[in-house]
Image (cartoon, rainbow, N blue to C red; front, side):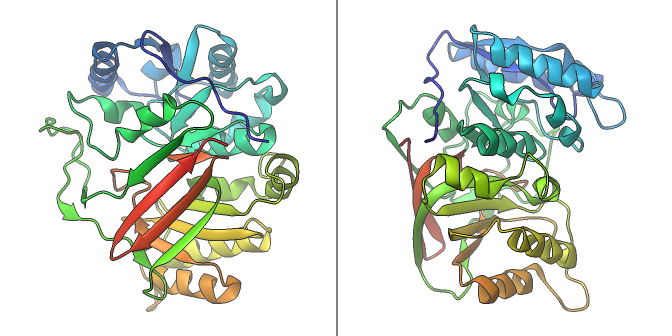
Length: 339
């Protein structure tokens, strides 16, 4: 069965550690502003040493990153962990982690952080959270979709959290733009789409991640989806929530084919793909063509342009939790059950 961390409460400490990329000196103000926003909401922040440096796409050598993460996981004073953001090479940390010593503790993030989140849930049955990054929480107000991550962390086992798709999303990153009132500049109308253009509803256990990085877990001890299904969810179907950060359409198609051929989509109720600035068409072949071919191949309902990934805001997906989602007329409603 899935193990859920204790609910986050006012006064608790949140640890921030850079398991992949760190934050260069020119952007340290983002860390301080985000820490301030948590503190004004009643939480304490512990900023690890790794967050302050970045060299050749990593915050620190893999031994230091893994040690700091394990220290925070084993520290009873730290009740949740948020990386500042993702990166490129989190996978080199995985062999150094002591998964058998991990106890349930909320870890939140996306992009390369999802490589860690998915590995933990698959290997231990501990729920993790595909959601916002720490530096994206640096404004006085958090938009209604992003802010749901805190409701998730404060939920007790047995509760149900309801989330609705966004009204608008951010089409381009503007890191230097002042919050007004949100960090994200929500400038385009959100419209979730369905392959086949019909309303869909499906349910199952959530698994999520950035395809660019989690595809490299296939065939490793950190990506054994079949063992997870047998050991922790007793035959429940899976709902995948996936995003494409940088792949063009052919690479995206090759990658989702790889996941399919590896059995990751066996016993799957539905797949949710996030909207993306990537997916460039080649030779007339688009990312929608790729998803249509996957739907034809598997018969699995497929939703896309969803609130997940690098075009925020994003809904909060709890790896391992039970969810049902309904998509119709460009909108989505998701119920997440902590059972």
